[in-house]
Length: 93
Image 1 (cartoon, rainbow, N blue to C red):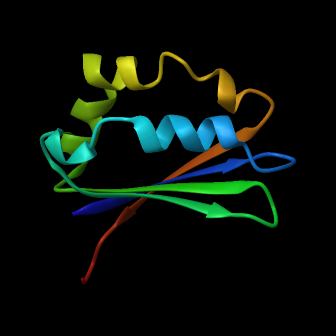
Image 2 (cartoon, rainbow, N blue to C red):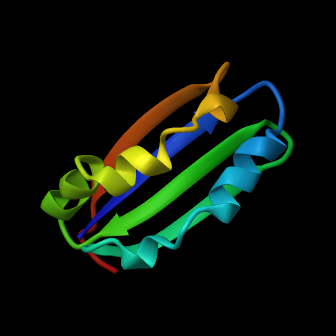
Image 3 (cartoon, one colour):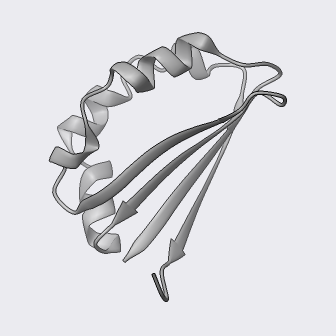
């Protein structure tokens, strides 16, 4: 299993970004996805997008899918920020 963390940082909170994530279809329907969370650090304009996958192949298949492209089409709310993606192998859960 792997956990993917996407750290999004802005100067302030982004309500439009939050609305986009909250309105998105559930990740539970994506093959190989075993968990998804969207976190906010109110004080710092920081968000963490946490997803758990059966394996790296499942995550990579998602990033190459039409569903991924559709989910990321309207990313204007992320403009002006930075993104850092990290992938972790789960050794014990």
